Image (tube, rainbow over all chains, first blue to last red; front, side, top):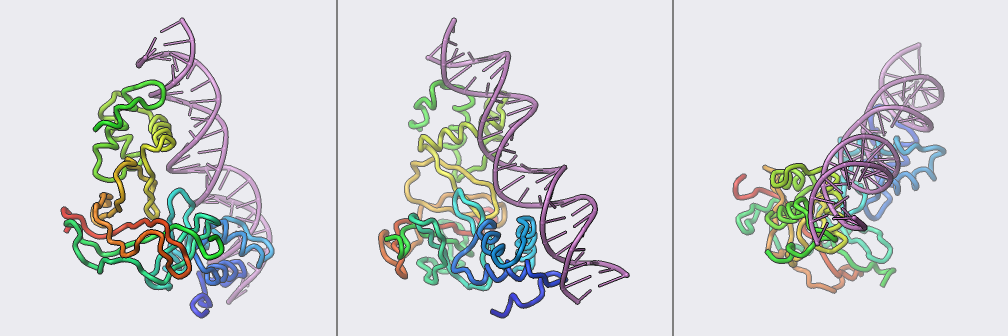
Length: 131
Length: 131
DNA sequence: GTAGATGCAAACGCTTTGCCGCTTA
DNA sequence: TAAGCGGCAAAGCGTTTGCATCTAC
């Protein structure tokens, strides 16, 4: 509730505030369309190009990360969530953040000759509402 | 070395043979451009549209799967590889298949209220050649 | 007042599709 | 020889960019 109060770019605008707020308030990564739809409700007009530009700006400033799931548009989430993974519900399609890390592999270990520095895990199944 | 001898679609052509062969011979998932470049070497002319059409056909017939990595074009690999995961080298960018599954989570277990049916893991680091 | 930000529409790049000639069976 | 298939070029679609207007500072 603090970091996104910093000025983004040179000027603070209601559009950028709204976009950052939407991302901070979400409990999972959002697509550009998600962000656009939610932020548009908070500001009067919001062009999709502004969302793309702001997302790109947030990316280059390192405030958000992209999250990719197979055959789906990129999603974005704040960068300071720490180590976590994602769960996509096969019922409603929503993507949630998960705190637990179900990986048995410590960092910087070797696996079959490959030096593993990092990992990405996506789980699929049913969210509490859908099962 | 057997399955792709089955006829794909109604007629067998050198282009489709080449595309299937490239996918079978690879030791990791390939992008459309990868497939195009490698298969073009085997046939005289090969339009990129043919690769897209053949990949889509292979997908709908369930012979290949798509593999997505963040901020990168989709890759494709044969479907009958069994449970496995992927490793991307941060040196050369190549994606490899890994036999071992470093997941500590059994199927159909609950995690924080979510019923986990399946998972996807991507590891990042250095391949044998790059470290 | 001035430079940065927005919105609109045009441009762009990757993927898909239409069309016609070629090739397989 | 008939219909599937491939190549080419046009169309689509999501994302980016140019430009004129607006606005934060």
